Image (cartoon, rainbow, N blue to C red):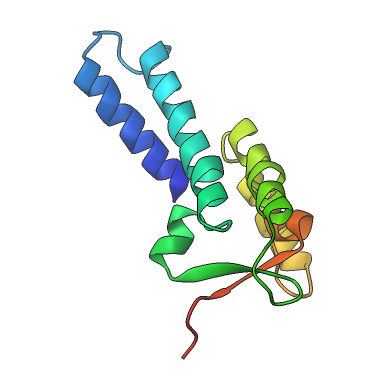
Length: 125
């Protein structure tokens, strides 16, 4: 979801700047795309206890494997080690994370494994 938002914001901003260069290899488009990626996948999770925009919208939360609130080191690991490869691989890392979650007995993805966290419903009923 975050990649889609990053692309849409980059397209909107590039159109707003109207450089006449299109999108590729327009540096305005790519700078905006990279900045929104960093914001959505690294900055927002750092300030929202490891939760991405998608998790915020779907009422999911991140907890430590022991059931407590994740500590700062876990949030950093989740943001940089968990989502960093997604940014570097331009989203292809999501497929690896899906494969990992399908093979993990608890269904955890890459970012949960490297940060020792679990995703749960924020307010289960």
